[in-house]
Length: 311
Ligand SMILES: [Zn+2]
Image 1 (cartoon, rainbow, N blue to C red):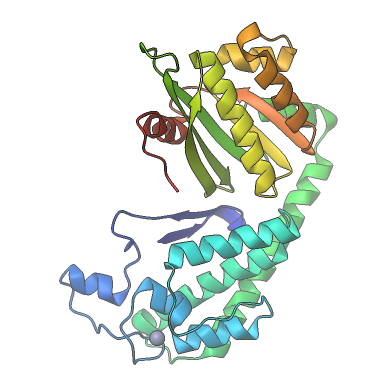
Image 2 (image 1 turned 60 degrees about the vertical axis):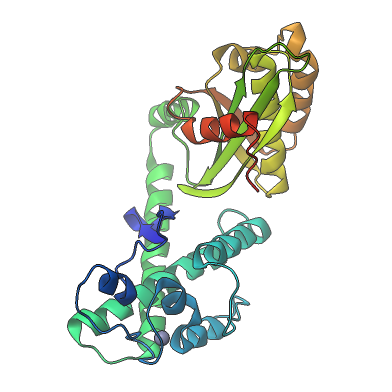
């Protein structure tokens, strides 16, 4: 797991490397033949790895329990640290909305644990759970300040700039509060009555993938398959508590048809379902993007077409 906290903590990014061992925790360094203590620098009892450091360590567990986020860790966890983090982020966004203060506190705490760990390892500081709490408070203050500055700047912008911003938005640059759902359909003509078609969707919020999936569909054309993909992308967004969504599709014909509300016969029914679902969002925009942009969804759609459904 890698956590990048970007500019002003507004960009969170978590990715899973193929080995799940992206952070240079002590166990990982040992595997790369760097001679360090393998023991956790916080509790000095267990082996250090990401799950232990951020969640299972007695010191980290004590921090989580003290926060009032409702997080209780137990000695044995059956889910990976990535899933654990993602589950809490999803829960907080779902229950609190996109400006969830619990999300900020959760991320700031993970970050503070990591900073304290580095201070112990590299600056020979002593273990002090209170230092983690203090660092978290500082990180949250910085976050709060940056949000205020951002809000002040946007309210000072001249009207002309705002229109420009809106134009930029329609081209695919969005505020941090919007969820982007990449969708794609994969369809191949074949001799059977029902050609096998697959759809894929991949949703991102603040650069974090929050959910994705794929499914096989019955479809008679690539246009119809893409319509299935958009419809499903919207449904999944609703199910995940998203209320501002941008759908990215690489199918120009369909995006234009949906935006003009004039539909080719083969997608008319699906298009009406899509428009009905759009009304359930506070804001829902459908954009035509290049094929490269929807690659994650394309990979999922192709897999579904070939019968490989991800859970
Ligand atoms: Zn420990």
